Length: 121
Image (cartoon, rainbow, N blue to C red; front, side, top):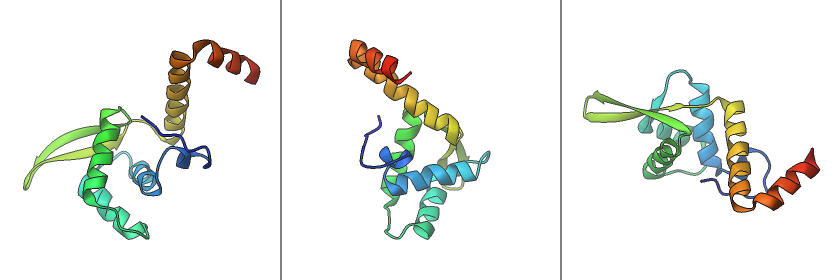
């Protein structure tokens, strides 16, 4: 679900710069959501390098499938549009990531993870 880059700090450990901009944009406009075109347009204005609309759509759909975002389908001019909303605020999202990683470690390396958690407390 999340790729870990230990050379980074904070949320950039898990997301590319443009992906983090997508998440930050959705946090900034809450409680209203945005469709992929709105998110992509925001990226075009704020990122030094262009990001394809397909990449944005794939990222939004992936985050919705993973339960990080919610998607509401609305019918409008031109057909159906997905409106994406954050399921968590930034603090809750950071906790979600931490819990996900700990659960994954406990599942894969239960004894070693439990011992490591005991040391850190």
